[in-house]
Length: 371
Image 1 (cartoon, one colour):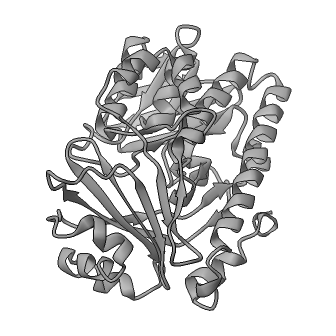
Image 2 (cartoon, rainbow, N blue to C red):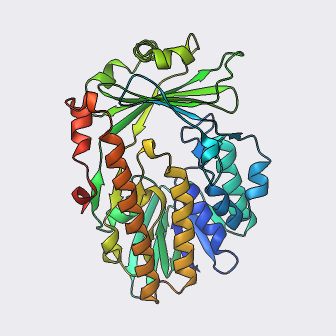
């Protein structure tokens, strides 16, 4: 059976995996294994990137191409959270700049092409992988392909599922049951509103924003245990429920809706302090390490940032250099604590709904609760 040697094997061709692969080239021989045969088409949720990401895009050497694409500068934020009067937050006051509303498919393609351009090898359609720990690294066998791949470093970039980490015995310290129901509305020609609107209600919270390609996202976040979501699975019921709130109804009006979609969206994180339990030379990045609640608007930034942190550790001699792993873990634990602190403050905000299960349960999600 032929054996191919690599310096790093990455499982997952999402933003984190692609960014890490590009950052490691040409110093390292990098293989990405992706279970999908080809990227999905059509609009995709996950459309916000803060201005601070410009530093990471510059490090990737992709900033100029990113700025020349069809992404839109993010406008101000309007929020109804703990009172009925909207609170206005001007994005221009952010010292890193206002950020962007993305053409998400174009952004994904930019990262993919950037990895290929850098000389990264990407194998798609890898649905069956057999991973084995070795004394000096990792072995990955693909079925039905009769080829074995070996590398001293294995990266889980499989997304929220953390499929590789969990198969290797790592535990999750958090797995919130937040569910996101969303649809894309076809914008009316007169819809010029560039604000991002968020609104709390008894069962959860809404957001809507206009994205490139003449679409508007409308999303609702509630508990997966709440029977309400089953009543809202049909577009007409979903829109009628949203229009109960004048703040949302004012902007969506009579816009037509595409089919409703849903996916898990709550906080999830691995036991970062014990990554080495999976085996020497293992790291997780992006959503596989920490999945951010959408209320933070930090998920995509985090994917790029963890890729940069992992690249730094590998270039510093990981896995032979133990301090490289310790530095990566310390940085990620610090990110976790800051994130959880702000998440707790945010969900503790709507006191008018504090007796409702969605909000009362999340008030208990303190940083200490995840230790």
